[in-house]
Every structure is written in structure tokens, then in C-alpha cells.
Amino acid sequence: MAGDAILTVRGLVKRFAGLLATDNVDLDLRAGEIHALIGPNGAGKSTLIAQICGTLRPDAGSVRLRGESIDAMDAAARAARGIGRTFQIVRLIDDATVTQNLLVALHVRNGRIWQIFDGPGSRADLSREAAERLAAARLDGIAKARVADLSHGYRKQLELVIARAMKPAVLLLDEPMAGLGQAESTEMIRTLSALRAEVPMLLVEHDMDAVFNLADRISVLVYGRVIATGTVAEIRDNPEVRRAYLGEEDI
Ligand SMILES: Nc1ncnc2c1ncn2[C@@H]1O[C@H](COP(=O)(O)OP(=O)(O)O)[C@@H](O)[C@H]1O
Ligand SMILES: [Mg+2]
Image (tube, rainbow, N blue to C red; front, side):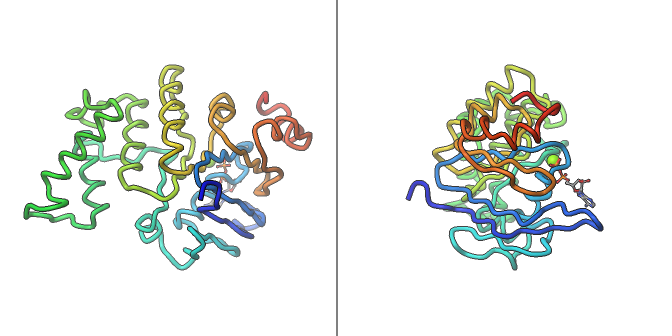
């Protein structure tokens, strides 16, 4: 079912006082794709992500996951249903270790915080899974480090490992490259590219190199409105997009 829409946004509207932050947005996230969402600062990208996650209520419109409406669900229910996300501002437990942070996520995923007895999903199983996930992400060397002591790049990597561990149906990424150095960005691009086969991603990103590298499709948001959706080539050549970005980004 490659190419089918996993996430469907239709007619989404959000007003803040006099400001139309989301202006009748339609958006599809298809199986197997990285769909980049770009646009100038204040265009409404984070607001759109928040409405998909359920942390912000739209004034109108609908969001469907695999054809099922999730409009009535709160953020926790949507996360449990498969809406995964990473935050523009990383939210980790600073005083805990890398492994402990990941274990919290695994326990939440399994819905049993107070698992005591052995058996499938036991603490030993989850510890093993945590170790495997950290090794796969090449973070095993920092497994015992306190999160407070990590570099920004490692925090971003850990955040992604945690988001993946929740086994989401879709992943919403709000500026995963923000604040990363050149080498860290390259590493993140490689990680996200490999992740495409595992989970479709809606990628909000200002780093145009990353966007052009990664995106199967791009949607351009300006003043809350999607002014264009298309392939990298189509978006690069779109005159309205070029006008909207004049003086903003060199694309
Ligand atoms: N909670 C809020 N209350 C009022 N205005 C908001 C709120 N959140 C965002 N906005 C406004 O909505 C617009 C879109 O913001 P945002 O979604 O953060 O843009 P982006 O992520 O594209 O930079 C901006 O003008 C911003 O100031
Ligand atoms: Mg934002």
C-alpha cells in the first residue's frame, strides 16, 4: 500500500484573536514518504503540528489516521493511536540517564508503568530492547550519561530514538536540525533518510539542504495557507513559492 495516505488533514482552520494561523489546510502524508512542511517564520507550521498532535484544538476541519477520525481524541489518545512527534524544544528528563529516559518511554508504550513480574514485556525485556535501540542508533556509548550532560546533537538523536520506540504510525518532526552543527546535521539526515522505510514523516525544517536532501514532497505554508505542494523540482520552480521566499531563504 505504498503511497496510500496514512494521515489526512482536511479543511483545518485555527484563529488566534484576529490572526488566521491555519487557513483551510489540506495535507496528506503518504506511506513511505518524507513530506517536508516549509514556510517563513510565523507561517503556522508549529500550530499545524500541534493540531495534528491534539495539543491545540482547531476551529474547523478534520484529521484522520488511516481513514479514521482522531478529532475527538486528546493528545495522549492520539499518541497511543500512533501520532508520534519530536518537539522543537526537546523534552527529556534531565536528571535521568539516557537509558532511563528511553525506559520511561518503553514503559509508557506498553502501558504498564509498574510492571513487576517477569514475562513478555518484563523489565528485563525492556532493558534489553533499550540497549538494542541505543546500539542501533550508535548511542550505546552514552547510555549511562545524564541527559543534562549531553550535547544538543545527542539530545536530538535521543529524542528521535524515543519517538521511534513508541512505534508510531506517523512521525511529526518540528525542526530536527535546529541548532545542530554540520557533522550532526549530516548524521541526522542519514538517520531520517534510513527511517523513511519504517515510518512516514512530516518534517518541519528551515535547513533547505536537509529538506532538498530528504523530502519526497514539499508543502509550502505562507500565512497559514498551503500555497503549493509538490516534488522538490516542482517547488523549486514554482514562481509563487519563490516570491514568498524572496529575501527569506535562498532556494
Ligand atoms: N497560542 C498562540 N496565541 C496567539 N498567537 C499564536 C499562538 N501560537 C502561535 N501564534 C501565532 O500564530 C502564527 C503562527 O505561529 P507558528 O505556528 O509558531 O509559526 P511557525 O512555526 O511557522 O514559525 C504566528 O503569528 C504566531 O505568533
Ligand atoms: Mg515553529
